[in-house]
Length: 561
Ligand code: SF4
Image 1 (spheres, protein in one colour):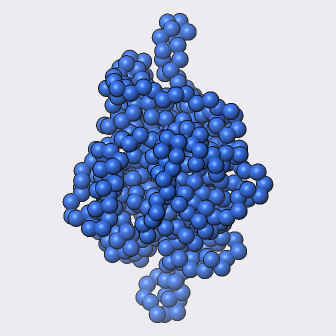
Image 2 (cartoon, protein in one colour; image 1 turned 30 degrees about the vertical axis):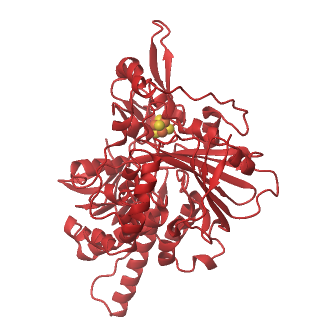
Image 3 (spheres, helix red, strand yellow; image 1 turned 180 degrees about the horizontal axis):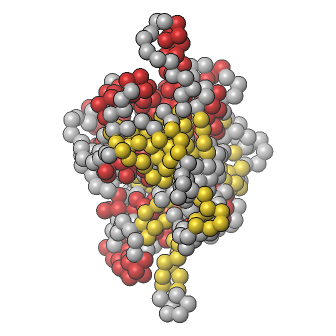
């Protein structure tokens, strides 16, 4: 099979905030270098028409971005200092009011004081999808190449050095055989590849595994975030308001919380985060989000709303402790793929952007030196250690382990570490799936919570919400969710865990249905519903589900979430 080959100088995989900031910063560095060389103030060669490539698997930049909300502009101030003056900066609102609230079953307790790190007053509320589109436009103005609709599915290797990526083939039938529309993917070759694929990156995991990059770090751990945008009656949303809640609907053993913020027009976004190490084998974040909306405090804010958008995504919460070695020969890892979210602040856009910018500096040095070995790229980690990212993230390194044995003890431990520092110790933790309990143990002294009555506008069932995510996939292609052995689903997993994937998947991809001939319950995978959240890859107790990228350009269409 003939594959097109495209030589590049640097490839960024994923058009999220880390890589787009990296691409802009790299183009700035190249421009400054060329000007200095041409002016004779710097030795070296001019980079004529450098090929800086940004690949994005979504149909367009921003389509797969579901996050953010309140942006800490620290990295943006460094990258685009005049962003506040620019008319095209995509701000929804600026935060004017905020609160932190603990929800009991029926009531609420408002925190009298918000720790300085969590104060958002004056910060911009953004849609990450729109922010990424804006960054992509700036990168393109600087002559970076942005290629949406192309999923990088394989790494190219030169010995043990990463040498680029291969994009996915198109036009393969569901039986795995090429159809008449078959188009082979391309090989993009480059001395430096920067992986910013978001949480649980498909290629990042491969390079971490092959080069043993996580030998000295804790496992990556995650939360699932589900969110909806609701439209309220005209004129109801008057200012920039942000609320964070703890407590209901989560029990004291489950780590997580909710967020609510106002957007442009009369829209409000509400979301719920639940740690994927939740013991409950029937944990269902979508259902808990609906339950949260029945709480009187939440209803008093958005009770007249109608759901118009939905999305779900895993986020990393291991922070500094889970960061793998960030570089190897020919490759660096940035953003959520390398656990750059600060779990204490529940913010990661600014730290991710900075990671991309520091990786860009290392890539630039590799271009100048003509050497992209690990020793050259290690400048990324050196500069990270000297940056505000380390100063901000390292003190929060034990954040999640503090809550391992419940909410109250976690608050106390976090409070002590907040004032006195975490010390030099990192409390060890385990991969999320290890904590899921078996049905007989978890439900020995608990009952399943009461069912929810959906009304189709405010309280929405899962499949209707999937419709609001805009997700589409070509049905005639191999499923991008690979279950190693579906016999496990029909036997051991059903008996021991009650098939947790049928609950935790926020898009109802996994369904146990009776076999027409035998009546036995068997797994059916409706992959076209998948919103690419990666939860199944992370939380499946048997670790037999693997998420791989489907054809480029498919999946959710978040844009404005
Ligand atoms: Fe998320 Fe997996 Fe469900 Fe897709 S199939 S939506 S990746 S849990």
